[in-house]
Length: 149
Image (cartoon, rainbow, N blue to C red; front, side):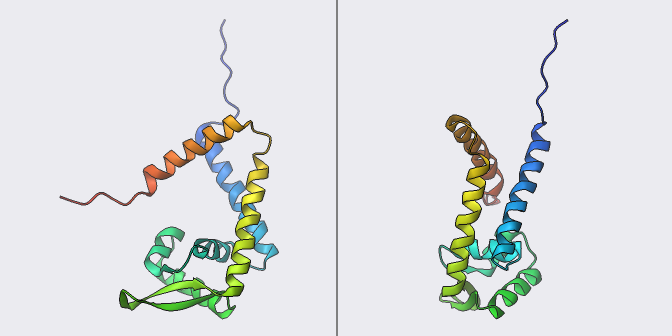
């Protein structure tokens, strides 16, 4: 009788558990900086420069009203500011204040370090293969929809 070894976790279960672990790391780092996980994600998204509200709703998967509340609370804490969009006077862009940039960079670096440490025991080849597979999944599901002809 031939038996095959079943994987410890099925693919989907492994992804779900990994997603929970990443959320847990974000939550821990957020609490250490007196932020909510959503505020930490917002700050991390703004590290490279101002972003429009429409792009933020897509990136954070939030409704417009929820994003407005998130930005309002971060603005009251002095972490972000709204600036006029030079291309569209009706729109605004959200950018980090110096304090928001300081905390955002710290939080981003800490999340990255902790996630890197979680995979520290994996051989480099496995890490590269996993990164490539994740990149493929993200590319297939985050690209903009094709134009309708």
